[in-house]
Image (spheres, rainbow, N blue to C red):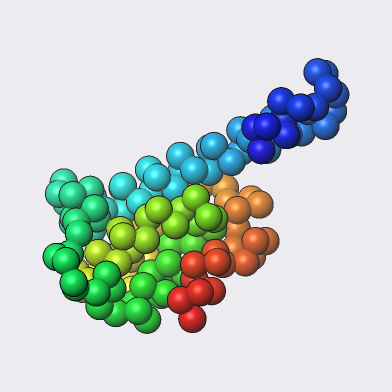
Length: 138
């Protein structure tokens, strides 16, 4: 995106549009990162970030409950907007939410709390559809 912006003519409407797109994308990425962090704190307390980033031992499966992972991603996206390819970096967090036994209701409440004031706009799953990850998990 940034390369496209750099190559366009200075002052052109197309360059301004490309810059807006870059800014919107960066803001959405910041929203995703802060929302996941906040959900971790809501669900696990102040240890939330470390719980979300925890790794399992060697040879153990990443996910214990694939259906849960798919559900949690969809719940999050329904309240907070599409994860996009960028958001796939948070799959470990969703996996740890599932492996810790967080219920769908708890996840929905935490997602609503984290994202209630966010205007999803073009990032809405109603516009974009759910992320490729939630589709791949089906």
